[in-house]
Length: 270
Image 1 (spheres, helix red, strand yellow):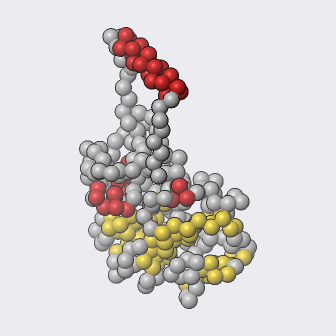
Image 2 (cartoon, one colour):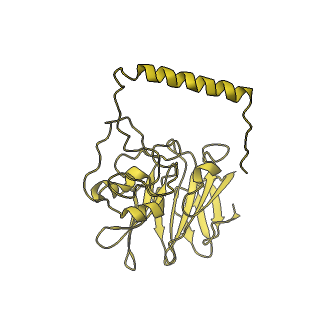
Image 3 (tube, rainbow, N blue to C red):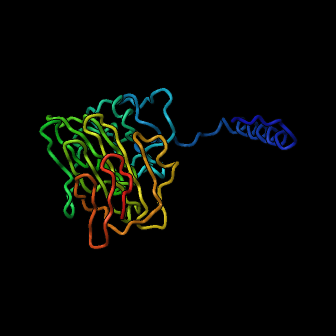
């Protein structure tokens, strides 16, 4: 609902102040102007429509460089502009919710497979549909990573960005691709994701891990592609280790067990 305010005494004072400021600016306009700055490569916004930096109609205000993006910001000149054709068509990057600066990166800077850790894998070849990887693009901090679906030639078919929730492992089954993480210093929340290999649809369960509740809020995940569920419960199991897959997803570690529905990621028991 939009509220229409009727101008009153405070509004009149504000208008007079604005007129005074305008007059002062006009008096000083003949002096030297301040040095202009170039927008940071990780500026706020949605993926650009083309490499020239123009934005698509209706572009939102959230994206790389914002507190929730998980992608490094910087001052003018801190990062050189990317060179070469983007690894992914701009329209596809917009569809996938990729931060603007990441969307502009060429393949060599966009596809950088995260080293595997523990028992998890970060690159899986699926003969049916190509290669799945966890990638951290050039310039991104430790809290940001993407799950990328690549074709046989290494081109990006579809991207699944995870600002402030960088996945740590991948598990590919005949029906789905799963990813997950435990909380760390860069991103305190734990997470499990499911990507349907037929439809490409994404489901994400975010749980508390290194805090009493999820650090990410509804405003942080609003507008992201897919279905996101925030669960403030803290489970004792380590979600940084891939689960056993059957009629349930079963996570087991020395600290406990967690069972999830393999399709909805709903909690079945712990």
